[in-house]
Length: 252
Image (cartoon, rainbow, N blue to C red):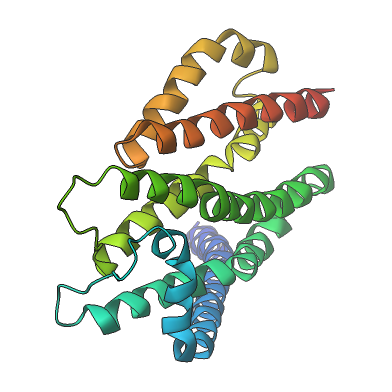
């Protein structure tokens, strides 16, 4: 009996070791991929930092073109001329590294997926990157000129319109984030349908609530003007409809 008990204990320890080793291997792989992601962001940042002021100049162009003649943007904080382009360059580095970051995430989870799941997940991954960049481009080329043109036109008489560079950047990053996330709505919709959380028919029934939710989301994430709110809410609604269309295709 003693020998049998001793053997059972050894077998139990061996099973625990077998379970622990895969966990340690996964944690090690996760650490390595996170490290690779950080290194990629750092390399891009060091490559772009020399052009930090040029990047800020490019991003601020939609506002500067509406400034009254003879006026410029201002810096009210002592460190703003350095910290503001620094912050923008860091965010830009993360944005440029996004495909590599998503590739690292995909490489970590892909071994645990079935082949059928991979055939759907790969197009979704690529589409999410394209839609994210499309959201940023839509914000910069469509939304910014309209929003900043509106703000510059409603300044009261006798008030000099000279925006602060740090506050401008905070607003721009908020809009970039809002539109980048909003353009991921088709991916989120398809994923919910694919996972069985909902169905295209159920989403169609909830369409009025979704439309109201889009405008509420636009109100919370954009400046307090109807132009930017509508420019975020309407594309969100259209992208939701696009997600239903692709969701029906995947359901079939």
